[in-house]
Length: 378
Image 1 (tube, rainbow, N blue to C red):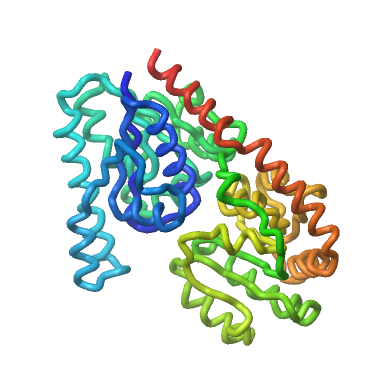
Image 2 (spheres, helix red, strand yellow):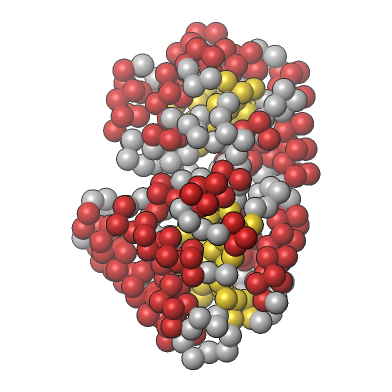
């Protein structure tokens, strides 16, 4: 059965997009009958981030006419921008119906907005098989808008298999009525250990990467920085990402007088920053496992300081980093202890990279996905 990978998201790029975009491109490269379908804007972002090369074959980049209209009107955020960009999803659905509505039976692996886009086709052609990946332990947060949640859940009910990134994701899906026998959970995630490597020359950099939303705690990160600066004046900080909390982050920078010490904004290619970093801070409220940014940082030998929540312990323990309470004091103390002890930092950084390489390799994750496909195709 030929395979079609569908990765759609026209609102940004995060860990799920980087991980699945690279994996899908690799799997299409290994299978001459496979196809990757992706919206053109997301593909461009993946190219800019160094995730893909733009030389991959059998990649169908879907144009985004309504998104271009929103950009032309200067609409970056707000209800009108959101509505126009989601009209592209309707267009994508129609394209899939035309392309595969009367085609031979196929297996579709869909991620993020691909669940909406593929749903009409799967309803028209129930003989097609589908795997849907869910990467957020809260389906409501993944979907983002309440009216779309029942639609996403309906897509999950109609697919053949659900790939839940963690046991936490699985528990949320079970509570939403998704049958347990339909849900599969991998033993880890996937990381490009060739792209993300330690720099020979580390610097006293402390890095935070994530969408600026409440769950990521970006303001909490900033509140820990004055104490770190007093103890380690040479430290420099990176808060990389964008999102609805940007105004609160800007206010905190001014309130705490941190403007000249913190680089704020979005970077497409994170490897150069992470490669030189000593410490990576991950302060998610529910779970830091398996945050793609955290995996990339650990692969670069940056020692993680992470909130002690969920399954974070599977990545961060006393041999690889420090788990802390979500409080500025303990966060600052952990970072200071690392920056003031380069030998400890080096030791933990090496162990962090080793853990990621051993437990979250491309090969291991692709073997898991291929086992799902074999089960669905049987």
